[in-house]
Amino acid sequence: MGGFEELGMKLDKLAEKAKSLTQEGIEKTRGEAKDWRKKLDQLVEKIKKTTQEGIEKFALETKEIGQVTKLRSGIRGEKKKIESLLKELGEKTYQLHLEKKIGYAELKKLGSKITKLKKEIQAKEKDILRLRKK
Image 1 (cartoon, helix red, strand yellow):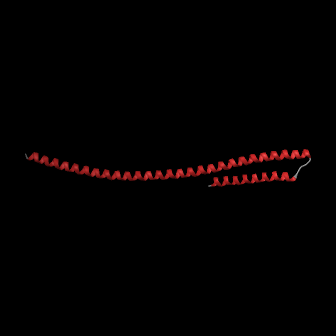
Image 2 (spheres, one colour):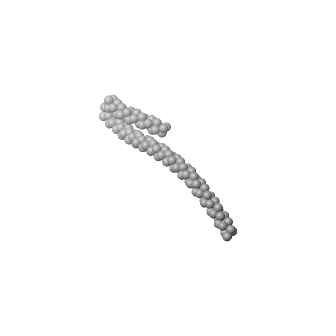
Image 3 (cartoon, helix red, strand yellow):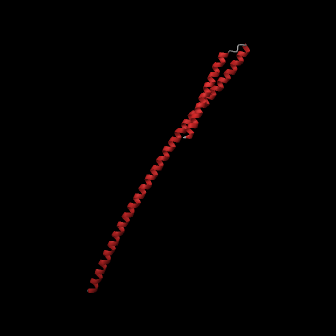
């Protein structure tokens, strides 16, 4: 029976060694898994940060585009008012010419309105340039 006992002892040693190696492998795998988890957490944080920055930049640019659009709309409206006033000025001047009553005060009033609208357009155009430079 000595051969069986010796074989049994060798098998026990082999089983112990296999168990020890398995445990070492488990510990190594556990450590690697923690490292991967840490790396993935860092990656997720980077993605979140980049996404947040992108959203903030997009929101700011969208706001600026909205402001520029609003200013341009105001400019178009004021240019239409100028066209209307110039037409009215021309018609009034012609009518007064026909009646031989061209009055300085009436022309000055219309001219002042036109000048005011042109200044408002210039201010809005400056605002557009300022917004684009941000």
